[in-house]
Image (tube, rainbow, N blue to C red; front, top):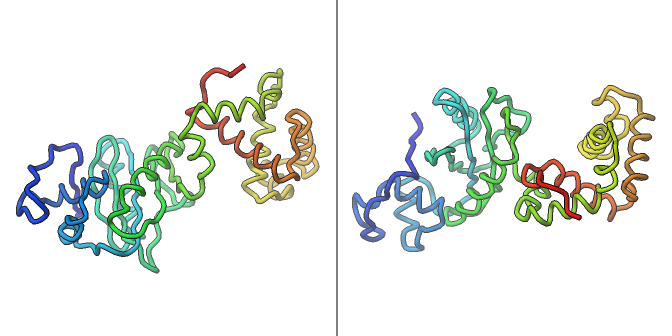
Length: 261
């Protein structure tokens, strides 16, 4: 049974790095994940976790309905990880994964039960950097589909950057997609879905057509129409960056507010 601590519980009084029972495993994990662990406390924290101070780590954030869902999510991570320590932090659980050459964490291709959501932070060097990976894992969790699935922050960096500044994200969306979103376009989401699929297939019209169940020429025609409405071309690098960021902003839950004028 994996060890689970609770971040929401009141921490024990801190009597120093070697404060006996005051330096519990709970206190060690909590301080590492919230960034409050002092330099002198790193080694005792590492001993409490039976993990080295140095090395590669990654934090995952798990959210699921009920204990059964949490147990399933832990099992999915545990099957891939050589060493993982779980830490309860309502409403999510945080997992500290020790990375080695054989260790990976779940990807978007892993099957997770309905309602189980898993956000995966970036790898970091050493226990002292766990707080960074924890914040990234929580950001990735916000990007997970509401009905369940895994999101790796490394695969959603533009969306994560835009999520850090919702006002800027809305401005990018409005500036780039304004005409498309303002016009009475019953197929506007179809155009954006075609563009999103085209991006996901590395610009392959053939593969996009296969995934969407349409003809390759249909994909090309939709992209040309998107270009006419936005005034930007998908074959021009700067325009492609604008369109990609605007798409992420449009689909981000943090930018669902009103349009700027």
